Each structure stands twice: as structure tokens, then as C-alpha cells.
Length: 171
Image 1 (cartoon, helix red, strand yellow):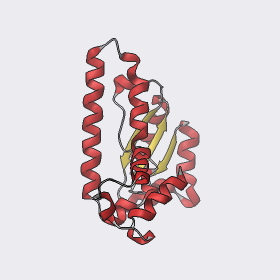
Image 2 (cartoon, one colour; image 1 turned 45 degrees about the horizontal axis):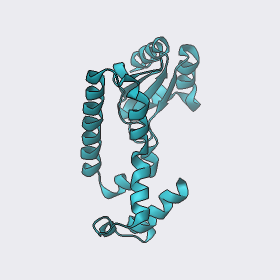
Image 3 (cartoon, rainbow, N blue to C red; image 1 turned 180 degrees about the vertical axis):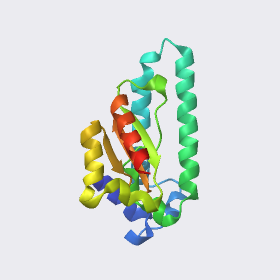
């Protein structure tokens, strides 16, 4: 996958010798189609996974609506990015949307908390001691999103509630 992504970047990322103009050429370079398909491949898996609700037409329609809405929101955010931010592959490691309750099949919850830049150190603590303590005492996993000053808290609902409460207390 990483090799495929690198081949794509060489075609369109100016810093890698490419040009954005390749996206406008027709027919499109097959490796660019593969590159783009790799970026969205999980959407199809998610839809297939949630298709267990096939018998419920309302659930299927709602899923289609959610996927369309999330896709448009993601596209709008992407188009608004600077070229540098749009090409930052590190920022694409994290899910940037929350799953609606009706489609969750695990008991894992994710909460994203905005942390003012001036308070980030309070949450991290000296050598990470505070955030490690929060993780240890709550059982959740709290970590800073490298793209923003947000803390992403993952875990079972009770664990997440405990960690969020501790973080909010610090803020």
C-alpha cells in the first residue's frame, strides 16, 4: 500500500516531481485511479459490513445518507486545505468522523476534546506523566491528535467518561 501511495505522489505531488495537472488528464493514469481507490476503499467495506441491516430499508437509506453527508463534509474540508496540509500523509492516519450510534457494533467509544494550546502541557504533564496517569486510572486511551490540539479518547463508555472528566478537570 505504501509503495502504491508513493507511486501516486510521484505523479501529482510537486515536491516529488509531479504535477496536480495529472488529475485533469483523460484518460486518467491507471496508477492514479488505483491511488484514489485505495483512499476510499474502506468506505465500501464499511457499507458492506453494515449491510447486515439489508432487511431494514430505513437503515440502508440512513446509511447511504450518512455516507453521502460525511463524504461531502470531508471533501469540503479537503478542498479548503492548503496544498501542504492536503499532502500531509501523517494527518490521514486518524478517522475524522464519529460513527452514528445505530451503526456501532462494538462497545468502543471515541470522544474528541478541544484543548487550548496554552493548556496542552497541563494534560500531558511532565514527561507525559499526567496523560499516562489518566490512561492508567480510567482504562481509556487518551492521546493528542498530531494535526490539532485535540485529545482523542478511546475506550469503553465508562472508561471514556472517566478520562474525559479528568481532562476537563485539568482544563
